[in-house]
Length: 139
Image 1 (cartoon, rainbow, N blue to C red):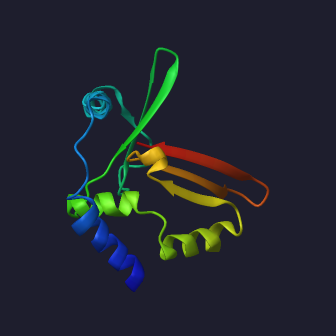
Image 2 (cartoon, rainbow, N blue to C red; image 1 turned 135 degrees about the vertical axis):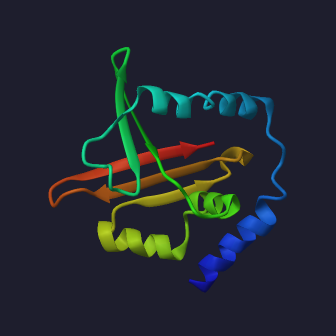
């Protein structure tokens, strides 16, 4: 836990303040997300049974596609939230993965090709007979 806390502190105190400025492509990509909250509020229908949960879940259909979204209120500093979201290769998170998923794959790659990106590949045990592989590429 001490090592994980030091890694999070380093991320907040050293990595984030020294991050390079966004490129034009990165700014354009972030600009595309501006309407997501509005779409969630205007089009999303709350998933039945989630009213009393900590996470508000919504679903809607549009042009033959099914969209899902969620909303949470976070009582934490933005820097800590980003650190916990991006710095996922901690000892504690690896131990939790092994406890619930055994020896299924869990690979975290950061700064792929020198870019601010994260590639996360993880196997999840969903039922006794069913395992799934998930991949996320965050840039």
